[in-house]
Length: 219
Image (cartoon, rainbow, N blue to C red; front, side, top):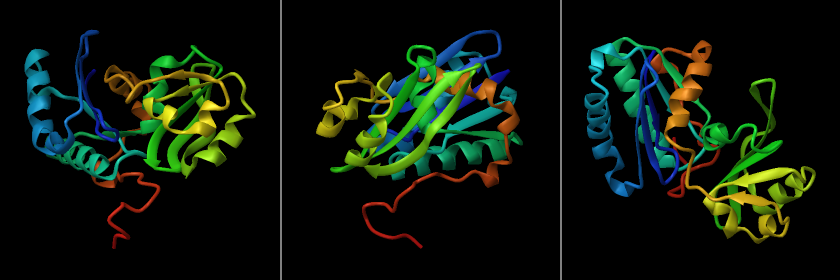
């Protein structure tokens, strides 16, 4: 199946195209303020490399968060608009699961983390068995001290994310840390292939922000 996957929820912009024959074409880079303007160009470039026309895409997938407010809005808005214009369904993917999807089987428990504010973070806890992720702690926004206290009950956990070193409470657990700014782009289409049943109409997809943006409450 020809799938386009998009992830803009972290500092890293990730795009992946699957050509349906085992070929993967990926992009991963920190684009900062250029994310919105460059995303359509990146998608076109990957489609060209994969010899796939826009009209040949069969499915679009996008991470809906949690993560950075502007990035989530950029990724969801573009992916949903593209799917709508092509008459395709879209698969909303968990940004926290995307963070660790390729690490399934590497540890009994996986704990992705992403910096939110100085004393708080976005986080989740997963176990992986019988070929699926099980949520021990659903993706959430919470103080780092509270997350460290919860995570202390899982001594086999692998903490995933470069931001983990920002939090002394997590370092004090002396757990293994896999430092990465995000999951690799190829996780997007791999996840999409295993979540096809979750495909929905583009207009129904919403970002999972979990907290108000730093500029204040929104209406």
